[in-house]
Amino acid sequence: MGFKQFCTIIIASLATCLHSYAQYDPDKVNKKVVAIYDEALSIAHTGNYPKALTQLEGAVAKAPGFLDAWLSIAGIHGEMKHYKEAIAAYEKAKSIDNNYFRDYNLPYSINLAGQGDFQKAVAAVDDFLGIPNLNEKSKMVAQFRKKSYQFAIDYAQQKPLGAYRFEPSNLGDSINSKDSEYYPTITIDGKELIFTRRINGINEDFFGASRNSNGWHKANPLNGNINTQSNEGAQNISQDGQWLIFTGCNFPGGAGSCDLYISYLTSNGWSEPESLGPRINTEAWESAPSLSPDKKELYFASNRAGGFGGSDLYVSRLLPNGRWGEPENLGAEINTPGEESCPFIHADNQTLYFTSNGHLGYGGDDLFISKKQPKGGWSKAVNLGYPINTIENEGSLVVSADGKTAWYASDRSDSKGGLDIYTFELRSDIRPARTLWVKGKVYDIKTQKGLPSSVELTDLASQEVLSKVQTDETGHYLVTLPVGKDYAFNVNRKGYLFYSENFSLSNNTDSVFNIDIPLQPLEANATMVLRNVFFDVNRYDLKPESTSELDKLVVLLRDNPTIRIQLSGHTDNVGKAEDNLVLSNNRAQAVVKYLVAHGIEQQRLAFKGYGATQPVAENTTEEGRAKNRRTELKVISQ
Image (cartoon, rainbow, N blue to C red; front, top):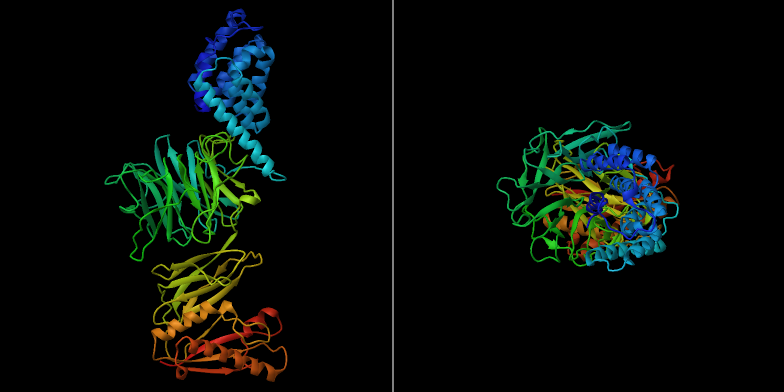
């Protein structure tokens, strides 16, 4: 039984409950005060809780020992999530007659837990369970609550809050209104927010807002053809802000009750929604989509047959033909016989947040975190803990690229009306990796025309390809860069020299990168710097981190069997000039040896060392010297 139902039953039955009274006798309450009380109950049933409270406070002012009125005050405050006031009213009632109050220890315990006093909540629910001949339904509800309270106590002992303060901040009048706003989703740069608004409590539409250094602009309905007379909701915007995948229920031509659709950002706004197709959408319920940062994986919830029970979380991968592959269940570490929903995959592409009522928690839907494992599985789901999770049902959570700023919807006491969107700072132990990004445009160096190209990111330490992104038709791209690793970055297109860059993020950095990339047609005299070929200081042995770059060079030469190239080695001006000349020559030769060992004919390859004679930057700074230490490729002939 939910708290709301419980409170409603209490309010409806206060006048007729039978107890063995020790002190309090409702029949002895002044009839005029009882009339005020009865009127207050009628007002409460209309939903006008503030007016009902005013009436009830008037009743207890005239009759301070009117225990039923104190219980109703407590119940209404609890319904409004005014836990502190509810607890005070319950305790006042308890002080009047502890024996009469005993039946109310369960709602009293719920409010204690709502306030975070789980130890006292356990004591209250134990008192309730001690009632002789308690009916089985009440006993079951109380035992469930006790289990949740004990979980909260154990969690707090294992993971004390320390200095952490949970202080959700309402996004204000630009975003929130008298209507309910929920399901926030945000672009990687944090500048575009899209959410669902339930207009007049009926129609769900998408609204969006942008922000600058002064805050959020006023939210407006999304432009284009995405909002309809039907309900649209549970949406997710891609990190680059170009795709919006969402849930549409009872759409014309839909496969089931709720299906997933996609809309694209165009010069005229958002395009008309398209179904994600029969592999994703079934006769069952599909909802709550979340795109991976490279737009290659789609996470969502479904109650299709073959799962663990209730709704489970699935992932589908984008196929080379542009269609979505057969969804895979995320497995037993994530899914339970209960309900899992609201997945959110962070920009680090490793950290998944979701809701569940099947994993042990605080009661109802709680938020959990799981990490993607090296071999593709998932770590055991971990509850986000109190006070992020509460005795209420928690909804969707999204986390910004900084790894610490979270966004969610709640109907807290400072709500503008119904659900509002809030932001808060995550506890350090449940944060994803802080994630930077690189974005820009790939274009032909001669024509300046944008080039659709492949963008690949590789972990230099493990040589594992972490993401492979296709630019859009105009050559624009965005790739995420979780901090804590060093990356090789390569851009490829047939008929062009590839482009390489590296990002050293082993140490924290606050940089984001905007790099427009001019690709050079594969022709005589075209040159490029092999930025992911590495040597130790004063040595010419290729470091293992060079492998991914050199293998791409091998593929380029195999795909273009007629071209001949020269590898040039360059150093900074530190040390003796003659030593630098020898070192640079040996480094260029080391690259040639690697290529020959991997099947490239020696006669297609030349090498030469130039030492410090051809600098591309000043040698007066470490940054400049680093640019001068390089290996270059030049096409000699085609």
